[in-house]
Structure formats: structure tokens, C-alpha cells
Image (cartoon, rainbow, N blue to C red):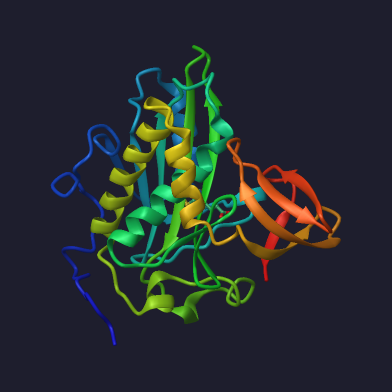
Length: 274
Ligand code: BTN
């Protein structure tokens, strides 16, 4: 059964989101591209070439020809059924705890999904899951231009109404979409607006109000990683079984291996949930 099938030809276009958006700065400047190589790369080019880029500028593309994921892997998305976008945030928080930033964004995305009764979870550090399938990912990058303006680029890709059959063989066992995992067909524009609003709120809590305790509570609440048996996959391919105990104030995952605690930093290893 398909619920909430409201993606008609008019509502499915992402060219303009102004009427639906209820944020103060994120998405107020909105650049839509039918086709681009990568919204993160375009965001970086914009930050390098201009000194007038407004914080909160959003770049969204219907098709990315070189969409990239973590570790320079290709990011798969499907035309008309995904969300692929980047948000430029002026980094005025340079003396603050930026290692938590991708987790803050991940929790904000999960919170937006929950508003539509979609049970999105955050797999440490920044993958979005429904059940055992990865439905989205976050790639945060940083760029400093020649005038020393410092920007964080938040790249987000989410498979929304993607049919299971279209995922390439290489990811078809691990990837999913909101539709494939919940049978809910979403209005992409509405979801995009909820995500942008949620990100604005979460950045405010973490970096304007500096309320790390509250933000950590949200991060832990949406986490599907803590209190679970996990398998760590090291760079050399070797595997270690561990128990994920917690996420600390620096965004590190605290794991227990045979009774001793270790902190892991994002990017050091990859994780498999048991
Ligand atoms: C991951 O590997 O999980 C992160 C995926 C991030 C993909 C998004 S799609 C929009 C933005 N532009 C890119 O090229 N990548 C990010």
C-alpha cells in the first residue's frame, strides 16, 4: 500500500521552495541546477570565487554527474526520486567543537524524518538508516577562500522515492530508500523544507546557544549504533568485534573491546552493525 502519494508533476519539481520554507537563513538563497557534477563541488567553487556568498545558501540538483560520497566513492541518486543538495554555512564557530558538526546534521535530518513518521536513524558518524538499509548520507567539507573566509559545506543525499530495482548491483544489498523501506511516498519539496528548517534549529542549539548537552541527547536518541554489538573494519580490511557504548562530546564513538574502552574518530574505521 502506498500512503501519501502526493508527488504529482507540479509538486515534484524542486525548482522553487520559497513558499513552503519557514526558516530564517538556511535556504533563503536557493540555487537549483537541473544537472551539475556535484553540489558540494559547485558550492566550493562558489565560495572560492566570491566573497559575498550568504550563509545558508542551498544548492540543489536534480541530477549529479559526479555525486560523491565519503572516501571519494560515487554517490548514487535517481532523477525525480532523490534529494541531493548542499548547504553553505559561514564558519563563525571556528573556536567551537566542529568534530560534532556532522552528527548534529545527521540528528537534524532524523528529526525531520520523524515529523513525517519516518523512522530514520543515525548510524555513527553520519549515515541515515531505516532499519538495516542506508537511505542517506552526509558529507561535510570545509573550504577557506583567498580572503580567509571560512565555510562549511554540508552535502546531503537521500533516496526518497527510489524503487529498489534501480539501485546498482554494488549497493543493492545495503541501500534503500524511504519508499522501499516504509512504502511511504514522500513529497520531496516538503521533506526538503523540513530538513532545512531542522538543520537551522539544530545548528542554533549546538553552535549559537552552545547547548552541547541537549544536542548530544538528540544525537544519542537517534543513534542506531550505541548500545549495539558492532564490527569495526580497519583500513587494512581486518575486523574487530566491539560493543558501542556511547558518543562523547567530541563526537567520538566510545567502544568496548574485551572490557577496555577506546575512542574512535570518524573516518578511522568503518562500522558494521550486528
Ligand atoms: C556518504 O558517503 O554517505 C555521503 C554522501 C553524500 C552525498 C551528497 S549528495 C549532495 C552532495 N554532493 C555530493 O557530491 N555529495 C553530497
